Image 1: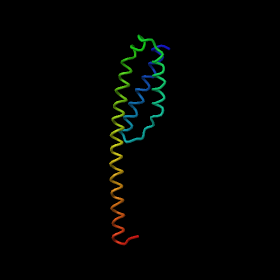
Image 2 (image 1 turned 120 degrees about the horizontal axis):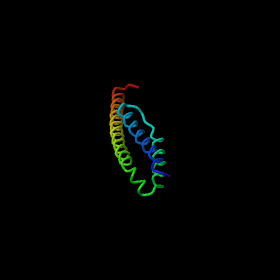
Image 3 (image 1 turned 180 degrees about the vertical axis):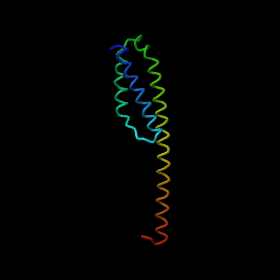
Image 4 (image 1 turned 135 degrees about the horizontal axis):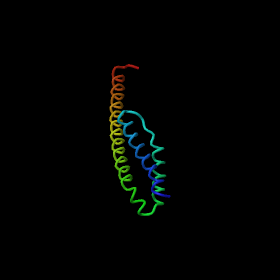
Length: 106
């Protein structure tokens, strides 16, 4: 294994993480399964490199780490927004149910 072989995997993982973040920003659903598998393969390949070869990939690894961190933050924001929306929906449903009970509506 050489750094040259691992480099495209890291670049693809970074591109997929960026694309997922942009998809979230656009309100589209994302599937991270492919990204996870790509990162696993890249990490496995980097783990087989000599120290010097792995150090040569450090800028790509740092870029991927930073982009994954930004993706995680975007996912947290989406999760929080969804949680709030579901909470609001639940409150509306409880209010409707209470109204129907008090008005005798069926």
